Image 1 (tube, chains in turn brown, cyan, purple, red):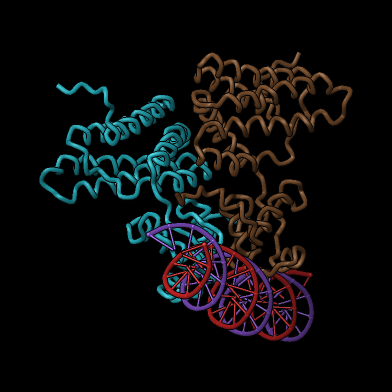
Image 2: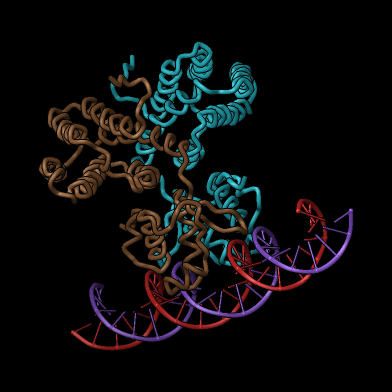
Length: 230
Length: 230
DNA sequence: ACATCCAAGGTTGCATACAATATTGAAGAT
DNA sequence: ATCTTCAATATTGTATGCAACCTTGGATGT
């Protein structure tokens, strides 16, 4: 047996993988800003490695869509336009429901327990959101974990990779900051309903709740002009 | 104006991009076989470059899913298992219909003309398939072009990239060799019907024909056991 | 015969030097 | 003043040497 899954290669830490992860983290937490060029020599000296592993890490990040490279000019953090947001949402709206549908027929007992646990924790935090300032951040983190576990349970590694690289890009700086209590409660109710659909053995139900879940979130960020306002 | 789309970077030919394209081509045409290790020194000397651009090209190909890398052991062509086929088909079955749906609302007149042209050529070739030995290969090539144009018309660059890298991997060595005349004609009819749906202004119709198109092709490669056989 | 250990060879990982290309800013022309 | 030219500088692209690591096969012991 020598079949090694792609991601298992990361159990061995090499300089390139370290640089890759550090840069990705810095993009996510805003240390590197949109359109900022990453100079190979600067990154190399900061991380105490030579340019070689930096170049290799940059090239990976370009392939994954975090940076864009221009020959002989360098690599810079991709700027996030309205079109990018639309593209990613279009993809997410078919990929995550697919993941949920696949997961519902084959999820393990222990994974399901983890999801129930996460849902409960988020529900508790939701009711504390007015008194506890850190609640929103905690919920965002647990929410990521909820979606991640669900996606892994789809038993489709390519799908998981796509959602990791394509979708996560859009989650930078996005949290539950502008959810009011009603919207938060609906979001939590969606999580619970997905679990109920799985228990009921209805992949279509689960899939459509996920779709509603994403569309509801989208509607909050891009309010529709036709909304009744009086 | 200095916004340069990611893929435009390839207008400048660098050694790394050359090596990348050559290796990808060699994987597609079978020069490199499944599980075969690509030794950096071998590739370098064959293509008359140093190991550096080879290493960078290999890393890109790993990110794109053509190769898998194991630290300190090398990169090899990914072996294609039944699970891989399933994973890719699951993805394709949501991504290509999405592409068609998006394309139908915004495709340009000239793109549409190209598609009609391709469909006509394929239809003509279909009726010659018994007398002209090259017909099947010509159809396969035109078919790729048909799908490619349709996908580009979706105006979603990420979607196009995904289909290029995720799906094309599965098209290696797959053509219309085992289509009988009836199946070929249905396939051609699907192409035509997609165009009709676009003309009629019905994205849902177009989307569902594409889904049928993919499922019909799949059924040919993986015949269902419950098929009536007498 | 079988397992273990170890050394030699091979391959990748990283650092450094140099080449090629792009950017920048100042000098000169209009 | 504005534009063009061009050389200096910065940055990326490539080659090469060495270090780290893995694989392999034979020697050794049981």
